Length: 279
Length: 176
Image (cartoon, rainbow over all chains, first blue to last red; front, side):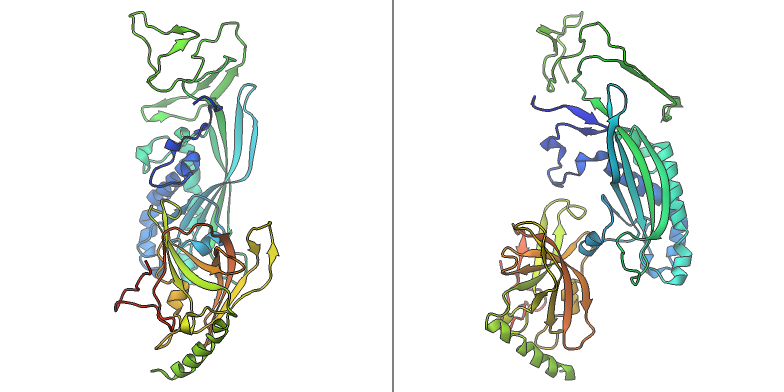
């Protein structure tokens, strides 16, 4: 297939292939892997960090007995229309791209998407005594979100892998948290659904897809430290955007797996005589 | 037989009269949607529709409170009031559990489908308000969600001439 822009924005890749869609799920969820990763990671982190204390208290709260701190998730914003159609479980965690998404220059050669996110955590209506027992979980939700983002992952999710990096986030920060009435409740005469809203901001940078490179316009450098567990978020990044006089060195066109790699009309062959194949 | 059944039988019979004369052009069903995947929207959907009827299988009254067309040929803005619906009693009526699909589980969806001149292919509504305060009638207020074009995995039930859903003693019989 050659009629595509072959671009990667974070981990959102063009073209979006039929193979990206699960044959059974049949949803376009895979088109936003960052959102799904963030939702699953935060749910796992909150449950891991708060379950022990939470479980001891909800054992005496009939409406929540046996429920985890995150009993349900939804990959989108909370709304009255959603809550009136779909039977959810509480407490429920929502994650969505929200507010403004700004496409702007990351550097002279690269574009980026600076995106506002909203994470909502909602408790079900509780009577005064039960509310006293549970309301303080909300302040800890914000703490867990911030700490998890800072680390890039959580030990309780995929073995602690830095999934926020592999999900395509160049940067991700927790900007603000707010506690109040749930967004899907508009009438003050309705039961109180307490909700914590966390506002995040991320950047996802455009990268060329593997196997495809345009004219070399410069080199980017990223310096980090770390250990066997992984690298800490880079403390220094800079780009050299000097336009060299050398000829294009990379393969000139996207080659499907199994294709013979070439440069111009020449086939690439190793000094030992092996022809290079795109695996 | 409860004392109230006598009154309910009267109103249940009376409420089929407009339908007999073609004065109830819209049908009403309550649907429980189930997905083959782990959550709403994942996999394929099947819906079990339960018609809401008065005696003789006649539909209840549907009245739109205010309407405004938002797009040519599209779904109109405006809540619909459905009822009066006769509460369940010994020989007929509709239970609260049926109207509200009380057995709904996590991830399933609930909709009201209205079909008729306003929505020839049917349109999905959500229940915004329910009034079960009267002993002789229930009322629903519903808001529009989406027009229907293709019905997937629809299940309707067999009913007798009085509008009662037929069962085998426990299970409702599907109209395959």
